[in-house]
Length: 178
Length: 193
Image 1 (cartoon, chains in turn yellow, green):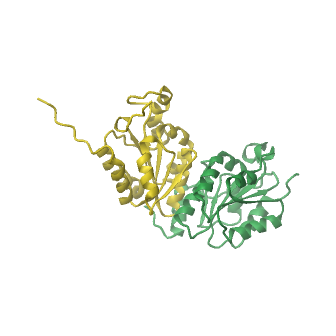
Image 2 (cartoon, rainbow over the protein chains, first blue to last red):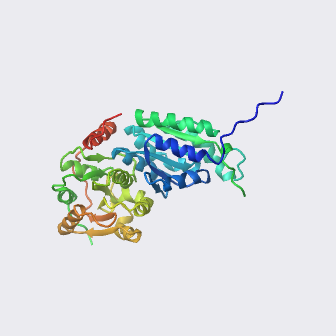
Image 3 (cartoon, rainbow over the protein chains, first blue to last red):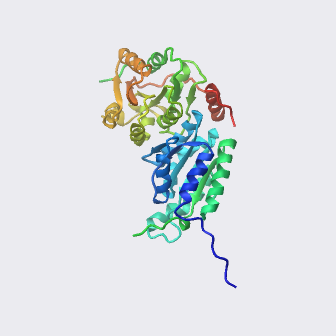
C-alpha cells in the first residue's frame, strides 16, 4: 500500500502565516540577529507598520530588550539562530528570575544535512542549554506544528509569564547551499 | 585627572524632581545610588544580567514613546553591553537617556582598575555611534545632564559622570524581581498576569 501523500503547507508561505499568528497574539515588537531561516519573517516584520523590529549585534540584547518591552506594556518575539542561544545564557537569568514573558524562535543549525561541522557543537547543545537555565522548549519540524506551537506558546508566555523557546528544525528550513 | 565627584550627590542631583521619568538601574552601585535617593514605583532595579540595563531601557522606550526613560548604570555594566550601543543608535529612540556613573574600576569586586580607568572614554565611544553625549566632571556638568533628561533631543543620549572610586554604604533595593516588575507595570497602568 502506498503511503499517504505528504501534506505540506506551502513551504514558501509559512513565514506569512507565522507573522499573522504573532500579530494575532498582539506581538508588536520584534528583535533579531538574522538567520537565513528567518529571512522572510524579518522582512514581513519590518514591513508591518504596527511592528517595531530591532536588529541586534548579539542575541543576548534581545533577551534584555524583551524584558523592557514587557515592562513598557507590550509583547515581543526574539528571533535567532541556534548558535545565538549560547550567547544568551546569563542574560536569560533576567526573564527566568523575574518571570518575564519570553517567546524565542530559534532556527536550528548543526543538525539535518548540516555541511558545516562548526555549527554542530552549539546546535547539539541548544536545547540542553535552554532547559538548563530554565527556558522550556517546544521543538518543531513541520510548518503546521510551528504555527500551532507559536500560538500556544504565546498564551503560555504572555498570559502565564513563561519563558518559551521554539527550536525550528533545520529539516523544515531550506538547507543552506554551499 | 582624578575624579572627585561624589556619586551619591551626582545621582541625587540627576534625579531631583524627576517626575514622570522612568528609571532603570544597572546592577551594583548604581542601583544602590538610585535607591538611596528614595524608592519609587517607576524604578526598575537590576540585580544581575550584567550588560542588560541599556537594552531594558530601550525596550521600555520603544513600548512607551511618550515617556522618558533614564538608564543609570555603571561603566563596567555598559562595557559588557558595548554592542548594545550600536543597537540603540540604530533604533534611535528620542526618549532614552543613558547616564554612566563612571568610577573607572570594578567597585563590587575589589576596585580593580578597568578599561574606563585605563583610557577608554565611553562618551567618545557613544559619540562615534551617533549618540548625543557629554562628560561631567563636576556638579555643573551633572546639572546640564539633568536638563537634557527633561528636554529630550533628536536621538538617544549617553552621558558619562566621572565619580570618585569608593564603595559607599549600600542602600539595597528589593531583590524580588517579580515584585519589582509587577510594581513597575502597575505604575504604568498594567495588570500582572
